[in-house]
Image: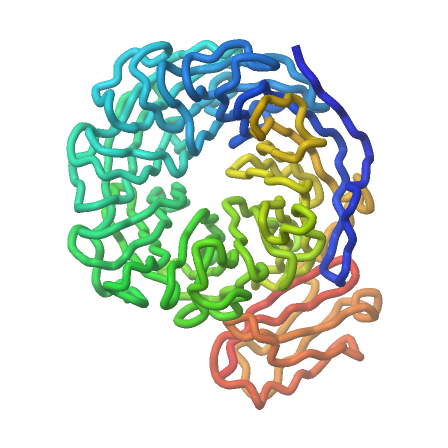
Length: 546
């Protein structure tokens, strides 16, 4: 039934760390599944000490028990060492899949969603048989379909994100140019379209966002105030519910700005804002913090809100940086950072870490700039994708990075689980020959699930120093600030840096006493970040200079 290999405590071959930011992760176990067709992992979750993962598949052999026609949704259940427990496909006569994802609902059920063209098989009714529409399923742990439904209209409706809401329902973000069916407020070209369904599959409400031009979708979350936040892109042409005061950085150019829309609990727009520069800027994810939001995207700009791009601005569609920034609760930009090299770098996955920073897991085709250890095809640099881990501190500074991959393409969507700061499980597609388990006549990916961890940390992780042990005063401050340490043990290995809101280092020093006075007379009035770092911890505090 299955070809599967496990590698315990195996260091990846061919990886060399060439700078102080390099980190090496270890494969704890790895499994390969698939057939002779295209099998690409796209989503994964952890439930009852096992993994449930979804993939796009058009195989009908190997590990794939059945194919309905063209591409299917493929659901796999594996144990915590990667052994296959069960699998099942869902679909109809045409293509089913795309940005396929899986979310857990309660203890015994899952939501699975992407899009479909099919009209038979597991699809009970498709009102729009000639178009791509959303297809949403609720299944149990035995793989039985509890309900399934199509959503959309007579245009193209393509899933971009899915979230389980506080009432147990499901919220879907799509890119849509439909103007009928479930889409009742289309504004022109492609809009961002939100659809809310209850836990029984009943459609509760839908809302479109955009102007007369092009909008694209990235992510949606339900916020702690009961509202929602949508992040995507807009070309800023105006009309619809796009507000021209959004301050698009290059209107009428055809380039996109990253667009953030904050909604209240009744889906009314509270505020919206554009971020970016002259060229196209995209949004892929958002996480809420107590004091604001972290936005993860990509950029081709190096002006406006963006600085530090590693590529020539606007170079090509194959050249962009990961762009991460923080805004406050009303949309004011607090800091931003570009991460990458001279080729294409992007990411859809970001996680908080216990030191107050973030882990980004995405893809890279770069072998310079922030990127070291890129694998690629010998003689063809920057031609294929590696998976790229990027660890940043609380204001976006790069702490370490790691490339995971072989010589061919590794495909990653949202298939990442964070088990701890130092332990991640990936569901990807791989075209690397030595990683594949089935070989057809064409180079097609197999479905790879792998757990990667830092073996130098192990189970006894060093916990970061509590932030309230270190005090910074007065705040706001004038020409000097004082930094107080609780003891020599923390002081001896500490360093201090002060950054402006763009991540530029303004001051650096090594404290020599438990109460250190820092001269800030040369700093302009404004908000700054003070990073205190020792061998175990990174703590960042805000300070206002007047």
